[in-house]
Image 1 (cartoon, rainbow over the protein chains, first blue to last red):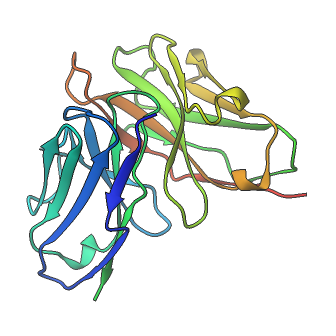
Image 2: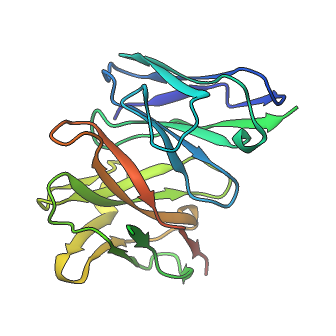
Length: 107
Length: 125
C-alpha cells in the first residue's frame, strides 16, 4: 500500500493567516492526489483533485501544488469557514489511501 | 440530483457479520468511469478506504480488511452492498457510502464527488 503522511497533524491560526498543509507519499504518485475538507459531524467534501485542480465552487483562496511524493494545500487568507480537518488521498493505486488528517483550529 | 444514502445506525455483536446497503440515485452504476464504495472513520480518527466497485464490476478492497469484506452491486435496484465478517469493537465508527468518478473523462484521475451522510456502526456485546 502507498502510505500518505500529513503534517502538521494540527495547527492553530488566525483569520487572515496563510496556512500550508503538507502531504507526502511513500512512493511517487504523479499528480494523483486529492484534498478533502471535513467539518465536525459532517462528511468530507472535495477541495482539489489531480493535485492542483480546484473543484467547482471551492474559493480561489485554496490552492494545491506538487507532484511525485510531495504535495501542499495552501489557504491564502484563512476564513472562519475554513476551520476544519483536511485530508489528502492518493488515487494512483488501490487502496486509495488517505493521510492522517490536519486539524486547523482557531488561535 | 445525485445522492448516495446509507442505512440507519446499526448495532452488531462481536463475531457477527455486518451488512450495509447503499442506495443511490441520479446516476447509473453502468456508466463508464463510475464507481461506488465505502469509507469508514473510527471516532476521532482518520478516514479509512474500505472497498469500491466500478461500473464494469471490477472490485477493489483495502488489503488489511480484504479477507473480511465483500462488495456487490445490485444494478437493477441502484444499490451497493458491503458485508464485513467477524466484527470486532475496533470496527466501531461511521461508515460512508461514496461515489467515485473520473475527474476528467477517459483519464485515470478519480475523485469522490458525492458522500453519504454516514451511518454509525457500533460493535458491542
